[in-house]
Structures are given as C-alpha cells and as structure tokens.
Length: 300
Image (cartoon, rainbow, N blue to C red):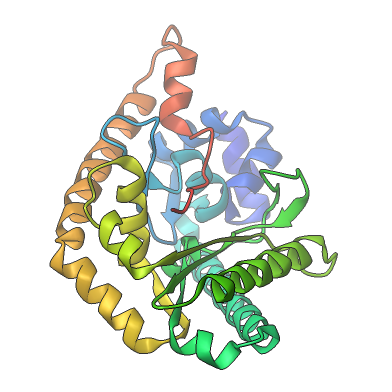
C-alpha cells in the first residue's frame, strides 16, 4: 500500500488527511496507521490540542481534537522531498482556521450587540452583564465542516458560537427579556440559510459562577473550565475581570493544568496502542481511542 500512497503523493503533492483517505481508498484508521508509522511519509500536524472534559472518559480529561479528527482535518501528508510544500500547505491551513475563528467571534459579538439594541433596557443590561465567548474558536480551532445540530438535525456550519452570559443585579423581567432575545438570535442564525450557525448559550448570575467554581462535580468542572478559557466578548469589562479574578482565586488554572497533563499522557498511550494493535485486537476498544462519539461539550 505504501507504493500506491507514494505514487499518489508524487502526483498530487502534499494532501490533508481526508483527501489522502479519499485518494487512496483506505479506511481512515488504516490511513492514519500508515502515515504515522511509515518512514517514507512525512506528516505535519497543525492547530492546537486542548483539554475537553468528557463523562465517558476515566478521570474526565481528554484532548481535542480526537486522533481521527486531527488526522482528517489538521494533518498534512507528503513525501520526504516535499517538506517545503508540506510546510506551505500547513501554514495555509493555520491561516484558514484562524480566519474562521476570528469570523465566528466577530459574528458572536455582532449578535450580542444586535440583541442589546433590541432589549428594552439595553444600556442597563450591558452595564450589568458580561458576554464571554468560549469553545474551540478561542483556541483558533474554529471550523466550517457541515454537521447536524443536536436538537433539530438542521445542518450547521461547523463550530458553535458558545456564549456565556453572566449577570449581576438584573431583575427577573430583564433576565427574561435577555434570555428571550438570545433564544431568538439562536433561532434566526440557525434557520437563516446564509448563516446556518448554531448558538449555544447560557445565562447565569455571578452567585452561580461562585458556586460552580467549587469544581466538585462534572458540571461545575465544565463550567469552571469554560470560564477560565473564555474570552471577553461584550458588555461589562469590570464584571469580566472580576470573574477571571475569582477563577484564579479558586485555583481553577492549576486544577485544569493537572487534568491536561493527564490528557496528554493518555493521548500518547492511545497512539502507542493504536500503532501497535494486532489484527485480533478488539475493534470497538481501538475505535474508542481513535475517536469520540461526541465532540461537543455542553455548557453550564
């Protein structure tokens, strides 16, 4: 098979993983094994690996993207003699995913601004609300791969717009109006054939944030992680800064660092197992290491 793969790369030049799979006709796992183990092929991985928390994983910690998705979307494969072309292709992919991430963040900000313009007390709400953007776009890993939205099955364009909305001192009616407008924007962006974007949002007050930073169950761990990695989007900068101070006071960065270290070690072990797997190995167990059944992370 290596001869066929080499001939294809000689003719086509460096290929991203999913194109390599298409051209060779190999199953994705077999293609990954070949490209990773072969001395005749060169691979270049682009993008950022980052921590996800997953209930299905022992200790909750894993790296994203999965091994399979990293190979298909973020790995360039080529011949040894084509290292310069491989590097050029990798740089283009890096530019493309950075541009997608920036565009999605800009869309999220425009959505929030439009929402506050339509709120009956928009200026008051903006002064007591912090909008935080989270998800893969904050790591520069936004993508536009079409996928079904979880609740409706509607096809959406890639990464969610994860918007965490933290309030302080807002009355019940103002909160209801805010939630209703967020839901309307979510619906409009999902149903608009031009955008087809999925907004995943939550509204909570500062007291809830403090409770979640206890980090003592899975949902609180996820909420804390999102608050730690989230970036300021719009609204009260003072409230955003205080949230970040609380995150530090509760020791969340160190707790996440330890989880990420575990996830990195687990990835190394998983790759070793996958590369050395025999034909008699349990297929389901191997695939559980190769990819996750659910890449999405809920927000709380």
